[in-house]
Amino acid sequence: MLASALPVPVVGLVLLVASGNLLLPLRQVVTIEAKMASKRDFFQDPVVERLLMKHGFRVHITNMGSREIAKQDYEGYDVVFPSGQPASDLISRERARANRPVLLYRPFVSPIVLATYRDYAEVLTAEGVATRLPGTGGRTMYYTLDMRQFLDLAHGKRKGVQRDPEDGYRWDEIDTDDHVRNGNKILAQTSDICESNSAGTYLGLVAFVEHGNDAPDSEAEAEQLARRIKPLLVEQGLPSSERAETYLSPDGQSIAPVSVIYEHQFLAHQIGYAAEKGATDDERVLLYPSTRFVTEPQLVALTGDGARLGELVSEDRELQQRATELGFRTRNSAGGATSDDLTRFLTDRQIPVPTTSSDDTRAVLPSLPLLEKMIEIVGDCPDRTGGR
Image 1: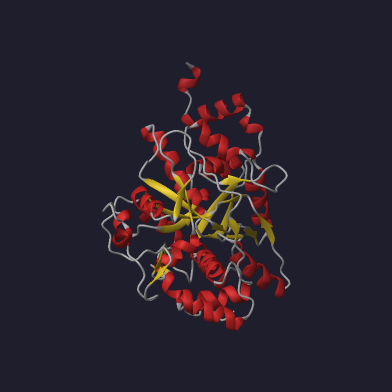
Image 2 (image 1 turned 90 degrees about the horizontal axis):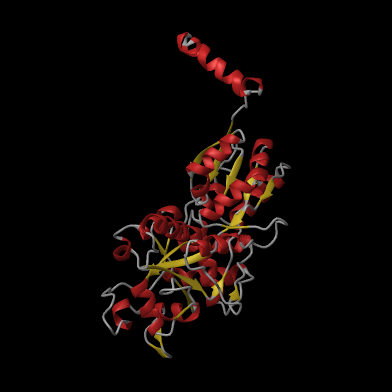
């Protein structure tokens, strides 16, 4: 009766004292200013936001492509999080020249993949260009893509027969069973190559294959190679996250049969789909290039608060677990190879686990200056250095 007669603020005070919370210091919430590309998927997750708030962090994100992050001014920011190592290297090199070193954190990885639809994957399988990977129950969701043969189709070469290299094959020309009914050229569509790490990395993969499984080592070689592969890369002007959104949309199949995205974007969709419907999305599948380059996203801490955030997301068990639940491959406690958490998580939910062959070729990207030159040539990129 006494409590009900008291004013509301006094009731709240009584409850705080009773719980002991009044004796705890009020936690100051630090707002982290961040520039991020596709890995903002993690930081914008509501569960992650709550976990960060528990530790006194709020992250305010400015969204832009990885290469755009590196090319534009980042003064006034605590962290930048491009989606791959080339952009991080650009930032680290620039800061080192200014005698302002950075701290780098690698909380998780997410391979570049080619996302497609089952009918298209099966057409490529019938052509001998793709191979089904073993699955756990039901039909497989994963295929290995022979990058050399895939690019040959774009060059007008099929099963050893070469026609005009300028006249690449189209889907309906190789689909003898009339499954896809698509007259577009056989290409993987990318995000804006001038801004996106996924597009730049795919350029590096294509260049590696086209250069005889080797990276160019001179400017003249790189320029010539860039001009040769330019027709094989389709720039749509979309950030990498929007490329994934297009692929996952109801109209995605008619817009882009094959899209370059990150593995975690596909797995996050399958995890959410399975939670809602009790089964996986059977029509969307992944092609893992036989020539692989594992992206190494690096959170670049520019301030002390940024370093605290980097340590937290790399070491906190709850945040690492949530990264797994969002489809990322987290690192083991020693900080080296990726852990088995994602495999266990997917297995527990009866979602097929992606596996790659140990025989796959590991691609090597060109040196940073040469990769930059190739990106500029292929993308006809404007100068966005802002005078830096």
